[in-house]
Length: 292
Image (tube, rainbow, N blue to C red; front, side):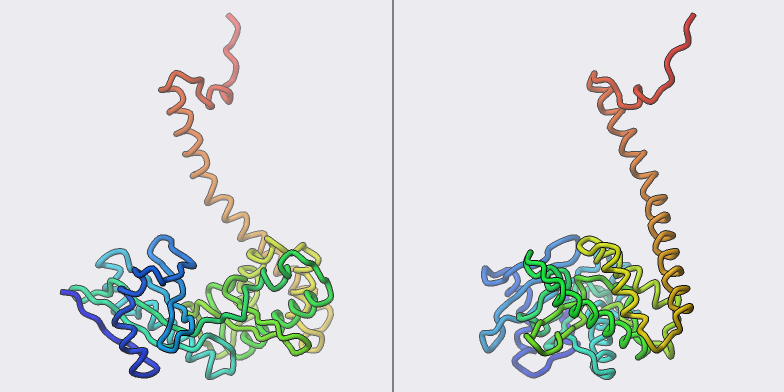
């Protein structure tokens, strides 16, 4: 039996709209931003005609849905993260409504509606400036982001998914940029964020900004995070060395995990070619036959 459970609504208008989200997302007015695996996200028109952000997550199986019902569905975790950030004074999209669909005691789907940050762009878009590189504004922007991430950690908050697509930046001329955190399901609050956890967060972020920033710029970002007064020069250098060590370890681990899949794919290709009458790739790797 299918059952709708309204988890949150800012007011009665959003509660009514939450009940119709499945229908609205199937309608031609839904503007898709992401549609992959079990997640679909995009924009729909709200009661006042303005765009609002909508996200649907399917658990994929009854067992996973049962776990979500016990430990918290994605929308419940998102609301928890939003509350943590708001309480600590950080920017994030305002929640509008959240709804779960239950089947046989398990969460099969969850829907989230929140404010659409129409004037903001992801960090890469803001840093690259639409292809027009202006180094001074970019330097100011990245420094502001680094300080905001440091402020987050100093407040006892961190996220297990810190990457540039989860940082939205609204540039405001001569005023400081408004930096907002999105994808709030993986936020955690602790008494104090350890330096190891901080560096792991920064490594995760570095792996995503490395696609569009060179190493010297990323190093400057790291020093901006560490700050001038909080740590001595030698301590900062040790932190930077530890950071690169952690990053190299993560990359090595990732390569080792990928290697068996690459080998398996190559062998499969070789077998398929051999069956088709084509020379197998593996033949070129075999040692030459011994002379008689």
